[in-house]
Amino acid sequence: MPSTRLVALASSLAVVLGSVAGCIFIDNPGVSGASTSTGSGGSGGAMQDGGINDAGDDGAGGGMMLPPLCLKYGGYSTVEKVVGDLVGALVADCRISPFFTSLTPAKQQHLGDCLTKQVAVLMHCPGIKYDTDSTGGECRDMKASHKGLGVRAADFDALIEDVVATLTKDGVAKEDIAAMAPALLFLKDDIVTNSAPGSAKQICDAGAGDAGDGG
Ligand code: HEM
Image (cartoon, rainbow, N blue to C red; front, side, top):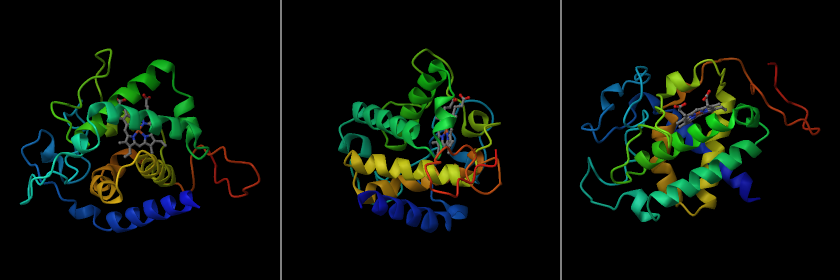
């Protein structure tokens, strides 16, 4: 089953990349916010990169010059489409959907707008900054925007699986997903605020048994 493969890919990415979380590479030190490279920095307002520094795709710190992932896959409009698909996947994922379906339409819009800019920065779309949503509202850093949500590690892992599945469905190559993954996994410490096991708000109760909800 394709989804099984995606889950396996996401899991292996998480394991491999999680094991190097303490030494994540950041190869564009000139970018605003790069000084927060030690892990959980950036709690003071919006950052130009949303805590994301680099997808390692354009050789900024290495020898080869490759086109930014953004341009490779069709530019900012592709990022908008992918993030739209991702939001659809999150809302449809019974492991974490209540986090998103409980938001007001305005908050959903804000999340989609800011996530689009964040992914665009990650994929090096020219001229894009993680700054404001479409109404001028500030895109907050990861600590501030996830504070009080009670996100657990299993919730985070579920979202990463959805990211990998969506990118794959939308035609992003496995190696490019692998290049982006560390920057996302790096945000885990800022986003996961509840160390309880299982999922926080899972609603997958169609006989699967182990719901792991527990509030
Ligand atoms: C690498 C993983 C993640 C990234 C890059 C990410 C990114 C974002 C961004 C850009 C925002 C909007 C920032 C703002 O409010 O200004 C946001 C908000 C939000 N995120 Fe995440 N997120 C991640 C993981 C998660 C997870 C695992 C959950 C829950 C399962 C989650 C739930 C939410 C919710 C509910 C909001 C809206 C909060 C509010 O407006 O009250 N996020 N996220």
